[in-house]
Length: 357
Image (cartoon, rainbow, N blue to C red; front, side, top):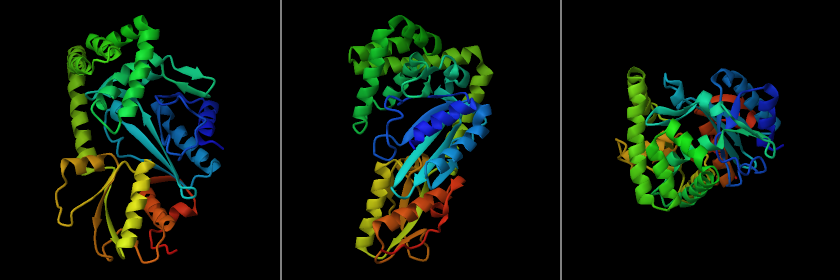
């Protein structure tokens, strides 16, 4: 059964308060693991999280996944707006992956642009897709922030253009309503930024987004200075955890019997990155001690830093005769064991050991 269809049905049957945040256009008629969609962003009421975990485990079992884990690296902040519960589905054969991120706010500068209640308020049931989604005006208000984040990224040029087209459509179809939402929740400068995008003036868009962020910070701070300071402090402490002391990604010590086996292992890592099982992987120099800014960013996003080491010290070993599927299974087992297991069959529980062809 399609995992998305099963999940949406179970959420609705259980009466949970939820909605899809974005990228719902092709749901649920999209096979996971085909390179088109491997992540889903939801907003779920905080009181419904225990039932959500139970539902996700049931869906994993029903749809034949080998493992379901929960990552708590992004849910440590004392401020609920900053927390993200991350759930990851793994299947060994065929090799597939799905990540579900549960948000409780959409934030700008660590402050809630739209909190959980505002995201769930006015949610729309999309009967064609069988899912709830947030109000499209609110969705596109935050899309300004998403566009700004990928504004100069060549790798994400297609995503940027897709976001811009959707925002343009919203502004053209509902100009008055959209303008009011931007003013009420964000800033008058956000309105100017959206209009600059409609004129394809990216320079003016970027300038107005900087002004919108500053205006938003001052506006929120003036309304509640004490709470604003506490949010900013919590965000800074949370960032230190995520980038420095408790990263989601990790250093992987690996040993391969020879160059052929190393190529197999690197090919598996590349395939995992392409399917978003890991965000990125890079090799560490043998003498590296301190991480660079880029390496810390890889760890914060759940990536792997691969350090080649001796067979005795390795977390993962690739001996002579190992095949790609065996290595992929070992790497998947390594990733699964790094987080809390909510559901797992025997394939997920196997030890990381050499698998020969």
